[in-house]
Amino acid sequence: MSTATASPKPPSTRIASLDQFRGYTVAGMFLVNFLGAYVATPVLLKHHNTFCSYADTIMPQFFFAVGFAFRLTFGRRAQTEGLVSAYGHVVRRMFGLALVALVIYEAPRAADTWQKLVDRGWEAVLAGSVKSWFQTLMHIAVTTIWILPVIRSAPWVRIVFMLFSAALQVVLSHWFYFEWVQTGGIDGGVLGFLSWTIPTLVGTLACDAVTAADGRPRVTGMFVWGGVLMLIGWLLSAPTTLYDVPEEQRGTPREHHWAADPVVPTSERMQSQRLTWAEPPFVPPPGMEAREENYWMMSQRAATLSYHVFAAGLSLALYAAFYVACDVWGWKLGVFRTLGTNALIGYILHGRVDDSVSRFIPRDSPGWYVSAGFILYFAITWLFIRHLEKSNIYLKL
Image 1 (tube, rainbow, N blue to C red):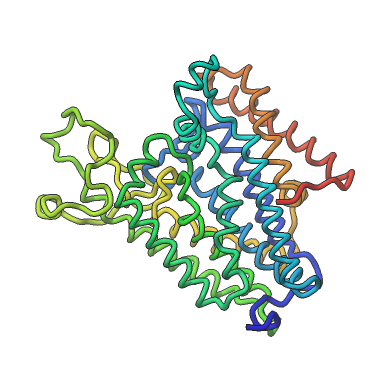
Image 2 (image 1 turned 90 degrees about the vertical axis):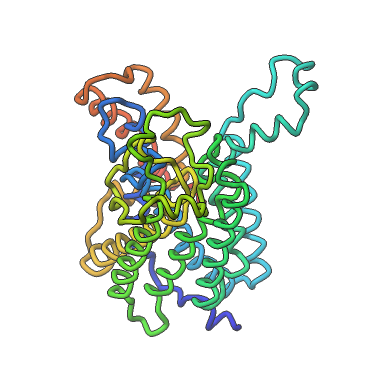
């Protein structure tokens, strides 16, 4: 397949909606990452790993934006520098991003003394470190490398690859992986890239829709497919109702908070339980005493299929709204521009600023005090990034 037909037509100017969408996502990350630790914070602004809250919609939007930009910039680079240079550039950048992740996400101390380190062995040390390393930036790096072979391919090839990745994640979760990631994995753990492929490749399809060869963006299609994916994601969560604990058994001690058959329900479960409609996204499910955790719930920690499909659809529909507002109507917000054009700097800085500000905010502080702390934290972080923007200093993903 030639580059002319496989890659999207590069627009002559920067796509404002992508920067604004990414800036909104960075601002949302600041919000949920800061507020998530406090008692006064509303439920929807916290991660729960049992349903899709507002906090859980932020990370998939990053991957959506990564996929969109990856498809766009790779096509440009392939046309101007050739395919070998374009592939080499991506591999070098993603290895660099992985190195940044290793530095930012501190692994637990391996041992206090040399003898204890020798006694533990490197296998045990690495096994404990890997779960800390595989967070957002590492997931972006690995997912980008994973989809690299199909980034130039036709839409149907990317869709098939997305379905293959999702199916493989389900199979591996049934085999062993769901239980592994439940014991300390973050955002899908080591194999999370299989699920993060979904919002990332949906982002590449959005890029195709915006940069259509005939110059006519498929905005309506993005809204429609966004809604379809959200509906499919919700329907995929229906099997979670099979894991409701009968009222007479609630309070009985269990070995784990997750089910023994979390992916494929046993025949006994299918006979004794009734499949029904799951709670809509953003509606908390029954607690652990009333429902065993399972693969079909919308869980960011387990990187479940229902969560990723719904979040990818929401990202697509939300981006379409940004496209209409920014590229059609000309609306732009300065703070989103600043955050969106320097997202990696924002990601690195916000944790450091959070650590400094949160030292003065007890976990049980009243809402007004937490809100004041957030405003201070957001302002300081934004001032740093705004200064870098004025100095024309950018750190790219």
